[in-house]
Length: 200
Image 1 (spheres, rainbow, N blue to C red):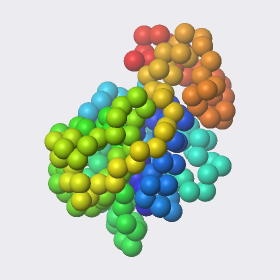
Image 2: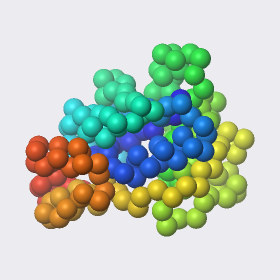
Image 3: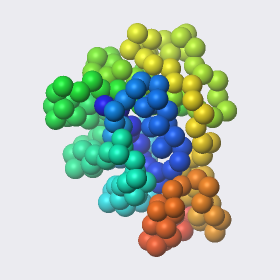
Image 4: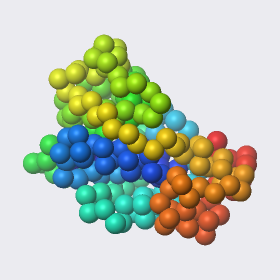
């Protein structure tokens, strides 16, 4: 079971591409998207928890290998990956866990809450990021990731960021090339990200 966490504010083709890459690289049966509740490393999302969860559902509806979990949204306190993995392991005791990370997030792994315990629970799939070279073993080690518990996944994924999408919406620009059509319609229908002061 792959686990892909993120603010998903909004979910976009880069996230979906990373999940597909992880499935290919590690021969996964499933990737579970976990919208963050109270992420310690980044500010609160612009869209509400319910809106981010619904956008994830819309984005993954047509892919049977994708699933959604609200585990961090219903849990109080900081959203630590370790707690999420422990909960998923408890609910799926026979599943082997894989944590799917872009290299931008993985490069900060050493600063996470209890990173050694995270590695004990899950193999880390490090998906290369557009425009950045695949990390070396030295870089993995410097980031606190034991290469014996890591899979390097060099697959092309769409070059897009959620902040770029929010700015585009606020500026009245099309986001059709960055998000699934159902997510684009949801953002328009609910008038998300239209406030230039809040898009971040």
